[in-house]
Image (cartoon, rainbow, N blue to C red; front, side):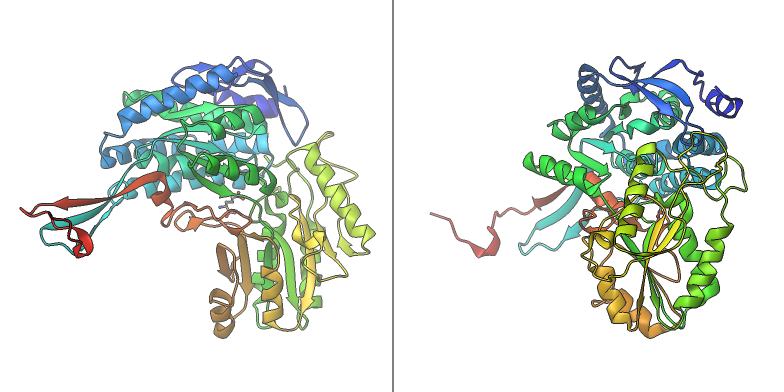
Length: 515
Ligand code: UN1
């Protein structure tokens, strides 16, 4: 193994090319299929991970349920104190964990560390929340009666997360789930097992110090069979799934068929709209980061760009300059802005989409292929691409399909309403952004005839949301909400409790049932 990799792995006691346990339920184990963790930058195998066997998945589920039965009686502010310690544990390893994300996922260093920061931030949020998870008192129509809306811990939350945010998405879910008094079982993407093992080991240590069962934050690595076992299990009360629309459709239906709860974070197909009055010195770099940051592998990445005719050519000229200045590099180097795609399969999807752009005679302004020279042989590097398809019919697959790669499709408009129509005309509804200095445009954009996405920005790009607001999308993105805002309300069971403290027992609505 390269020294580049082994130093990073040693911070988490992961030994080069040794088999690593990929299951934690209070104890580390793993006797299922062995999967490789591969570095997307160099192609080298970082480690072999022993994933969960079917028996280990059921055992972990039973242990997480048991842990919940204990933990639900721990007062919420004490649960908050646990979150505070987890926050400290993560902050102590921020740089190391960020580097591991970069090594295993391929995103650049500042984004790897930024993702750990999101987990830290949501822990801070959860500490406060632990003293504010309030129900309410409702006015009863009957004398001597109170109605209380009470949140109680829900049970077991299964978190199925994706490769592109191997730390933050679990963090959002775990922080709320723990604060709400639940047990959580995590199935990460099979291609980012090492990161999930490192995160789990940090949390396990803190649970141990607090005499709490490790299965409160359990881990089952593995592929589709592990996911299916969790989604189908009557022992799981809430499934939080991040991934493709195709898989999300199956997950949603399965969970619904047993009347459990789900949070779905599926595809994004996010647009930026630039008005003629926009400050281009903000808008150009904003779109650049949105489209090229994380090599276009965020759910929130900018995939569609709608430019007002008056500024279109100037905007594209300035944007292309930034694209051309990009050099692929080792994402561990602090001056690299463009790392590799996560897998070779992702390069295939990129190539297919470029091929499609060529067959429909799109104008490819820059990019459109791999690099002749890359930092390491074997890395999944592709050139960020700007294309102008001939058609602006958003139902064409080039516009309506999400390709998880740095490809930005551009169209030119004359009226804001037309651009908003395009923004809303795709199945997905995660994020969108408008660049303007005109207050009237802002009102239209954020109002009833405006953008229909779950995240609606003004003079800020489509990606890079903070944890304080709830994160999620509408329509085929799945309507899920995680992280801040009111998202915590999904991680509890709600009961309306009517308490009669009078000496009479009147019926509601004045119904008379006396003999
Ligand atoms: C994702 O792409 O799955 O808003 C999550 C952002 C990040 C999270 C993205 N805070 O881009």
